[in-house]
Image 1 (cartoon, helix red, strand yellow):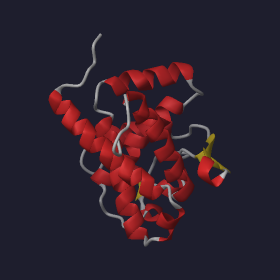
Image 2: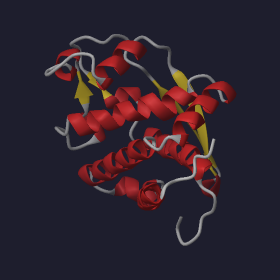
Image 3: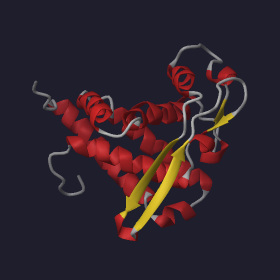
Amino acid sequence: MNLRPTSQEEVFLSLAYNRFYDLADEIIEDSFWEQEDWYRFSKVINLFSVYAELLAYEPFKYVLEAIKKQRPPMESEIGGPLFKFIRNTFAHFPLFESWNEVWLTKGLVNWQKEGLTIDRFLQKYAGHTEIKYRFWEAEKKKMTYISINFPEQYDDKKIYLSEILSEKDGVKFSLIMMRNILNTQVESIKNGI
């Protein structure tokens, strides 16, 4: 099977990869976390949005399937459905100004229609056990440990995004995992990409 990108896909992929890497390079820096909440939040929203759009490129379907078979349990679900859930929350509920303000309830999620992406994700993963990860920041010689905590139940009690994934360490972990997934489709990097 030949999955070489078409010329239109090449244009999109080049623009999207460049934007993703620019955002990731800024967000990983310690100075980024000293910025105002709304500034950080807008950049993080963009990071998750670009990543989700890149996942629409067909080869990533195969990458996530391979991760499911070859990597630790739940890594594919984190790199795919969880990150899409976060992106969709930002896109469909642009009601908040910071990561720590974002919350959902079953009623809010289904205010218009039941059974859509966010609803399906929360129905499937509510009650799932905590997942622990760690990531290494080589330039800082620092190992960071994080937990992904799915809501105990999915009802009309507020589910805060910050309780699922912390802002600073959770976002850093996310962008590192996203970068690893996206890098599977990069043949070479020159002039920033």
